[in-house]
Length: 53
Image (cartoon, rainbow, N blue to C red; front, side, top):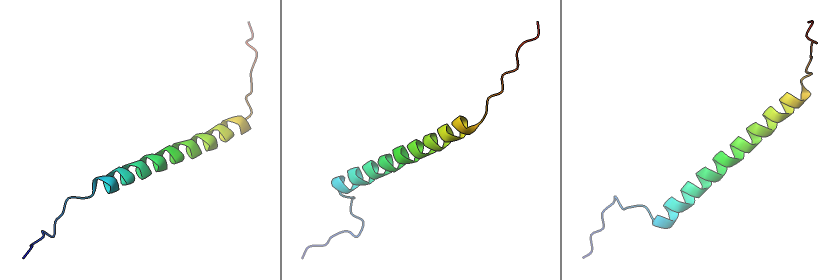
């Protein structure tokens, strides 16, 4: 009679897959936020006041 523990170690492949998915999600989130920030910076008008001197 084989008795298996209910608390098994997670599969190595599953752990790697989850880590890759988290890394991909973070990379995508950083790229999307960087693009949004870049658009905000480009849309702002830069007013240069000449130095009176």
